[in-house]
Image (cartoon, rainbow, N blue to C red; front, top):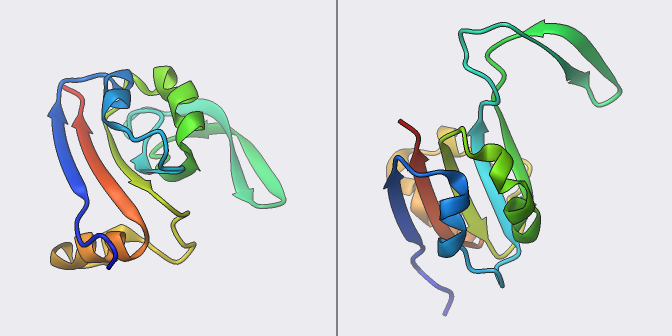
Length: 127
């Protein structure tokens, strides 16, 4: 019978590299939800994709995206994420293209995550 639970951890005032101790390195995938590389209220010069074939370089703001990577890649990039809070899902398989967790009712999110291989959910809030 498949695992019917995943562990949820809530952490306040930690840096992302502190989270590595909670990861199971044998679980292959990490999904970061709603990564925001710059405060929403600040314009900044960067390059962003317009679509899969072209990009825009200039002033942007309110950039928010999800990242999916291997657990080992997350461990490598984690020092670059220390200035951010995050929601991290660790899973045994990649999350499907069509899964948008914020569109799933909150009381169903855990079961959806478990069905998609999730083993751990971490909420890390930066003060």
